[in-house]
Image (cartoon, rainbow, N blue to C red; front, side):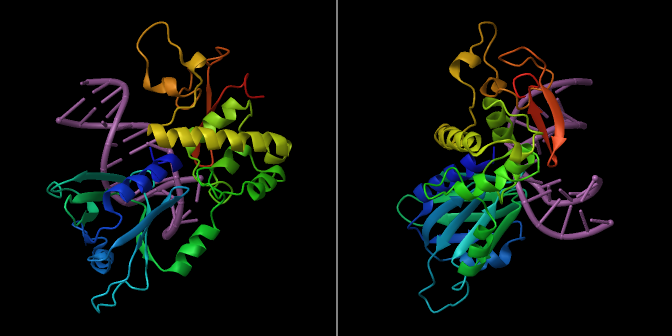
Length: 277
DNA sequence: AACGAATGGGAAT
DNA sequence: TTCCCCTTCGTTC
């Protein structure tokens, strides 16, 4: 599930697999053939994530071939459909639309495959800076400063459900965390941002830091408290991990009222009209 | 097996 | 606002 926690997890995984290695890069699908050629033979120095954006920083070439030297960054955005696969040893035969394959050198070779991303491109420092300048603070980054985001939300007339999905306000939140954090704080997604006071927003930010951090560790989004998750009858379901996301028409876990759904910011938002006033 | 919906976001209209 | 990208997963036949 590519919300911010997945991307941070991916950055960590790629660090383990490939940082310090010189990579062979290819684009079996062909859509990133030029970029792969410029990447090929360079060493991965570090990986990083900001919101839903993944970055690899590559060293310059030292063999006299200048191609790619001005572009230290590989920028990947998975979008809704993008996926990464990886492993050690020989990579599987490429099939389907494989945008990018990286194979690291070394005693224990590792590979990473990327398919279906919204963005896969090489960037110069300045281009990356421009991109990051458009992103709000990311609850998963230790250096995040929530004050600007909180101030911006607190004076906006836009619906809080739309503000939380706006990556220039807060980055890394997706449709699941949006619905869930609003439920956990009893906030109707349709309420204007400025109806909420700074203290309320600050509490939500702190909760996002905890929830998304847990998401990185678990590799999935779990936002329900254990008491609300208990299911005396039947097997646990996938949706037990959520209060309202994807549960339209099902009873609210706390009050039993059917969960509502509505389109907001081009996505479906879910909420309980009783618990979220 | 076949189909629809989905965690996102940018370009086109 | 609508479309597109074009994968994966869950549901239905």
